[in-house]
Length: 515
Image (cartoon, rainbow, N blue to C red; front, side, top):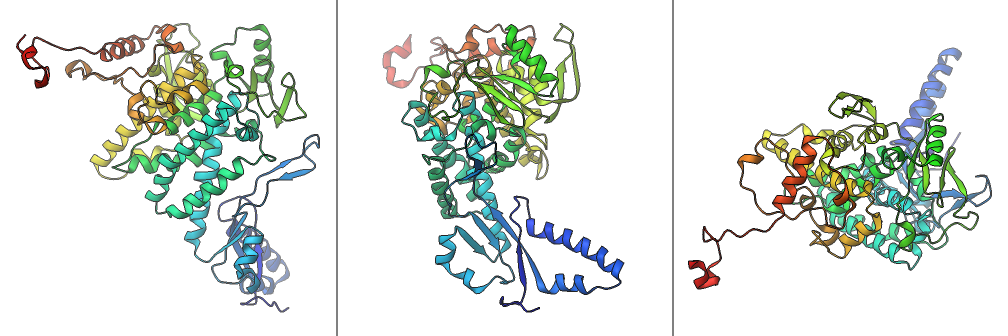
């Protein structure tokens, strides 16, 4: 059998979205070939596969869905992106005609010869395309924006969300990618292409569909960016990436933890438990901010819609269903009414969040948020706590703690009833503490240090990260001592005080300094 390819090899291209897909299919084929050869007492087929067949690794990136009212039987694909298929042809075994750049451009194909280039392509897909998809899908779903086509609308909410995504990319994803040796030019090209795809007027995906496996996707898609910026000595995590993680946690919070008293909702929750499903609640202010736009033509907002694997949502009733089996290890309250009784062990993330009796002060959530972020099946940031010298480990631990505090503050506001779109508007308009907009450092959201040393240190002014208009300002602090302490500490620290007695006024005040 003769093959006309340059090296006389048949090229097998695996288009499954799994790492090193060519190597994986090669190992399976060879394993079965060796069994076949052993049974037939011959090694010809194994020799043929080894010498005459090339299994090429690839990356596939084209969003596919199904046409409305087709029961998933009729596919719907987005227009061809620039990198619909990237093939690593390390041995230059592909047909010569595939080297033609015009042909590659016509079919959205890129040919790489260095495995490191394919690794960069995969990293960019995860960080830029998948990362921003995950960052925005949970917030959009909570806002009743059920399809990414909503980003094509002229509503104020879509403008805020796009501004948010632009900042998340420019101030977090791009510098992190460059830190890790990925070309800034390639990264920008990936974002430009992806942003156009996000805003395609005739193709979008269900935001609820994208939220599936959100707990793990956060670590896979946003984790590399967070890790890179924590390790960097001259860069910091911003409120934009903290918001993304907080929105994911908000989406994965069962309704019973905040508003499960309604009889109909209670019945929904009980029925869902029988299917190992949780029920969440939509953003309460979503209807006041132009968010119910671009709904699919085949669904009314009053309908109960199935979005995946038997999971449903109902916009008019304000609920949705989700699954999450992400485990975390932390201390959670027992079923006893006394919150002081806490047991340490492994628990599913939604269960841990539901036991916190939201809404509460940010400090009440820090342990669960941290446990989630450092779990290998969650935020996947556990490697930040080991490796390197003692000074580096301490620096990374401090940055991680600050990030945990920022996520906890935003999450606390979300579950207290503060509208997600209003949180984004505060950041975009540089209101309150967000002096640098979406690029504001996470440090501004983590003013409370619950440490034994707090009482021994000077108390310097620090703006309160919770605005007076927040729902948290009307929330009882709870019975835990640390919640009472955190509220008092934050309120006292945020008061501007001038001590005239010690003459600490600036020299420009002249004779006033003599008082």
